[in-house]
Image (cartoon, rainbow, N blue to C red; front, side):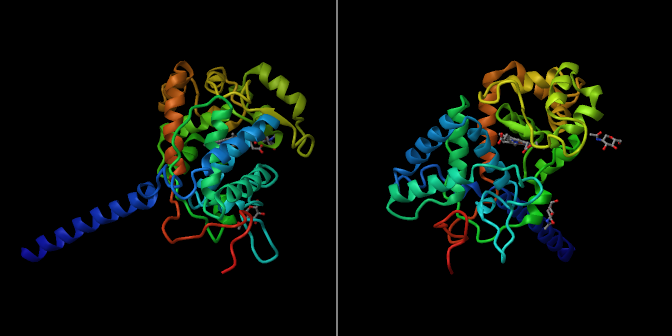
Amino acid sequence: MVASMSHRFVAAACVVATVAFALLAMTSSAQLDPHFYDKACPAALPTIKRLVEEAVAAEPRMGASLLRLHFHDCFVNGCDGSILLDDTPFFTGEKMAAPNANSVRGFDVIDSIKGAVNAACRGNVVSCADIVAVAARDSVVALGGPSYNVPLGRRDARTASQAAANNSIPAPTFSLDRLASTFASHGLSLQDLVVLSGGHTLGFSRCTNFRDRLYNETATLDGSLAASLRTVCPRAAGSGDDSLAPLDPTPARFDGAYFASLLRSRGVLHSDQQLFAGGLGVTDALVRFYAANADAFRRDFAEAMVRMASLSPLTGSSGEIRNNCRKVNYS
Ligand code: HEM
Ligand SMILES: *[C@@H]1O[C@H](CO)[C@@H](O)[C@H](O)[C@H]1NC(C)=O
Ligand SMILES: *[C@@H]1O[C@H](CO)[C@@H](O)[C@H](O)[C@H]1NC(C)=O
């Protein structure tokens, strides 16, 4: 009796410890702090903001690209700057992974920011992963979106994983179930999926990513949008693959047009329209809600960005502060 009681107690304690550890591993955000650089380099955040504003003024799409760069960093083994590492003959990084190759942009802007921040800080104090996270926030703000405090203190990975980049970033061909399970595998909810997909209020997609939708999914695609997208994206694979279409009608303005488009079957990507089928589903209700409530979208987007920005950071003495965001420091 005593033995079985204590056995049960140990089992229960193990479950508690496992759950606690899992939660900790998912969001060790307790160790991140928006004031992390207040003493070490008060000039860091204003410097990042100024350079992001300049880059977005020169090319508004850069704001979208920097937001996506942060998403693709965080979904692959956490927000650790791994996406920034260049491939070399001896090292395979994430840049040529399927979701990133010929697609993810903004590396030169991150390099310029890193140089300016190191100069402003008189040394190498701010991690590349933190620069990416802050640049994403400043990009959203520069294009009219909500502001939020970015938790800071991430350190940079000394490794990267092309396999994880292939497997951990959702594809535009995914069904709602697969989108939801990919987000769940990162500790993010169905609501996070919907509100963060609202990032597609900014930026563009290449034809290769929406061609199938134009020729095979006409039942769920508005006819006039289909007709106009077909002019930039012909049916034959290989023709116009890199032609761009805006993900919503106002690709340089953070607004509710993305959700309004989904209500009218005008989602550009298959994955976008998966969130709204016009029925009674949970995501249908969320899309209707955000289309009707711009303030709720802004608030919930900001909160979800903080959750995404807090995925599995390296902190303390893990990783390093890279000198050059494209390569690991000498050991
Ligand atoms: C839900 C799953 C998602 C899928 C399947 C997806 C897929 C895609 C695809 C295929 C593109 C076009 C890339 C190209 O053609 O080169 C794109 C662009 C973009 N995505 Fe997503 N995405 C998702 C979620 C997100 C999230 C969570 C964010 C940020 C919060 C985001 C932000 C962006 C932005 C801003 C662009 C435009 C980038 C530019 O113009 O450079 N996406 N996405
Ligand atoms: C990742 O995907 C790309 C493109 O499909 C492929 O060439 C590469 O071999 C994959 N890498 C790994 C490690 O699976
Ligand atoms: C559409 O579906 C057909 C049949 O499943 C397939 O052969 C084709 O590659 C798909 N894509 C396009 C762009 O037609």
